[in-house]
Image (cartoon, rainbow, N blue to C red; front, side):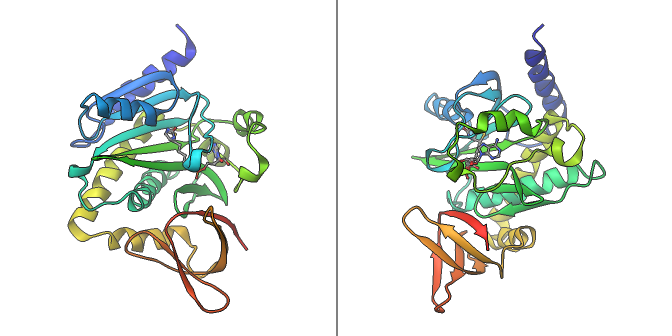
Length: 276
Ligand code: BT5
């Protein structure tokens, strides 16, 4: 049997043995290779799939990030998407969802790798998972009528070369932060199936916390994990570059930046290019 098929089969088996959610991932599809798990999730939405349907790929040939950017997805990573029906996540927006998922995913990974190399996870606004100032994961929320697809990509058991030899295809200007993986940082392989089950449980728990207590609960946790408040940053919004000191994350998930001249800017989307 092909080693990669076996690997994905093992991930699926371990995931199914460990899953403890009520809805997220109760229906799942594991694909050896696909274009983008977000594409498959949208196809499944068109075909009437349930809220919480999970798509996992062993590798992606057209993994994507925000603004049409490429997401490198060789085998050894966790590449997955969740189909979320709007009526099941009422009042949660496409801006808030990556922040909720970021907090939930960071907590799950932190706990999961505890005692296993002791990595310290941080978050970079709006959607990056960071260890030691290097990006090891990203989140992509796409919304269409009545649904949001939440894509999560995590460099798990990958050597950095597996990314960097594909990296040359990317424009260097796209590399906002150097990449890393859980393996590179903790020197140990993670059990991807069990990690996925832990992440889904954490997302489900955080989503219901937000429904019960409001988004503020995520704002507080996010501010602790991100350590960006009070830092001087440069943010590219696509139309302009804003420099200033981050003063807050607001109730909508937007970043509030105080410019040198004293004005406050509310930024709902962009790339933090560098803490200066
Ligand atoms: C993201 O976009 O960080 C969101 C990535 C979401 C990927 C998941 S995988 C499952 C699901 N299916 C998909 O097709 N996508 C989702 P953004 O913030 O735009 O960052 C993209 C940038 O990250 C690229 O321009 C590169 O600079 C960098 N990058 C690409 N691949 C990477 C990797 N494997 N690890 C670290 N950085 C990477």
